[in-house]
Image (cartoon, rainbow over all chains, first blue to last red; front, side):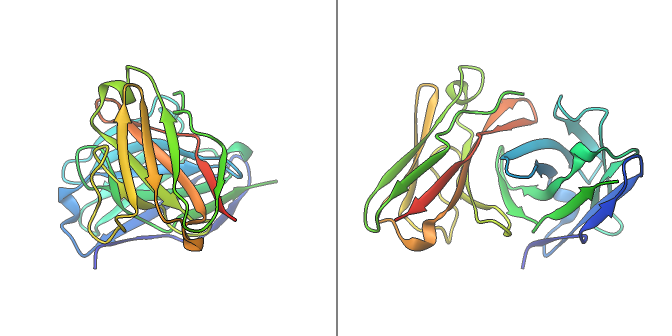
Length: 118
Length: 110
């Protein structure tokens, strides 16, 4: 079964760093792009960026460029989303998803809830 | 990046058909054959319903169909069922390797 398993919920303080993960299984991880999507409380989905684990080629949405870092470790079939200094406005659910075709995401993780509060 | 425009909410009775619109611009929806639709139930992973404007992944009910005219894409759900109650999002190619999502439509089955 093709699946993406995301790391568990996080509660952090403003200014702290964080790295959440998304592990793929059931398919050739290095052969598909992995994207990250944010959903802030009560809001819609926002596309953050995407990485090709095969060579770590990465593209960011202009809204998130410089705010987060997307990376991947092909030895563990895992993609990552990280922050160096969290803000309260980073409180959201973060989904990873596999790019299944030219421009759609066919497999999604269940999401990681990140809460940033002092 | 500006989100695509969807109605914030819609409702319908079981058995009815409803159509959710997704309006963009000539820079995204209007210039793209890569529009997709997702169903999102709170607390669950989003699910791909339609890709490439009107194609359906295997396993998705044929009650779901997609189309596009000009800068507006549409998702039609026929024979509404209680289980269709969810949030629905459209998405389109924006520029090379960047996506844009619609604001989402909350569907209520009366």
